[in-house]
Length: 207
Image (cartoon, rainbow, N blue to C red):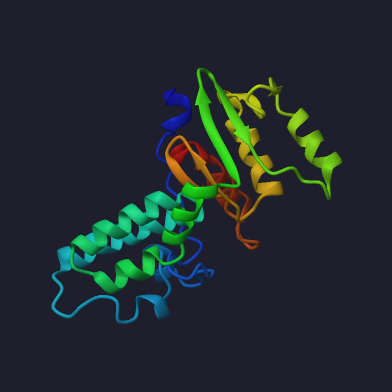
């Protein structure tokens, strides 16, 4: 199902630090994907320009994956950074996600599995705003409830609508999908509509 697991590459802005999650406010930090405090002291002395450039590219990729919620990808990239000898930087990059990946693997709040041309989705039930929650599911074209699987079944082509529902009702929650653990991101409040749209599009890249 390439339309689900392989989205076209999309260039995004790094809006939040990969290490601490705080908003990035200067152009250098946005370019690198890490804030000045977190990058202070993380690069050892005597780096070649090539090593620094490769490490910076890894950090930026991790920042994009982090703000899209792709936890396992962040941890994998941290491993590459560690293999380059940047242990301190690798520890900082994976610090917000490693425990979550383990937790999601054991007891994910949200699960998404592929079943032919459809997705089976389980989530907690939102009792406090159940009317809005039920209505949101019913607005997804082609959605049905699979009683045997005890899951909502939606066409894979409607992953964008599913992602919007998850962001609306479960920001910050952990889940598992076809490509592993993920965390539903909370879009930064001060990003532009174009950046938010790009964050939404990143859903297909990692689940």
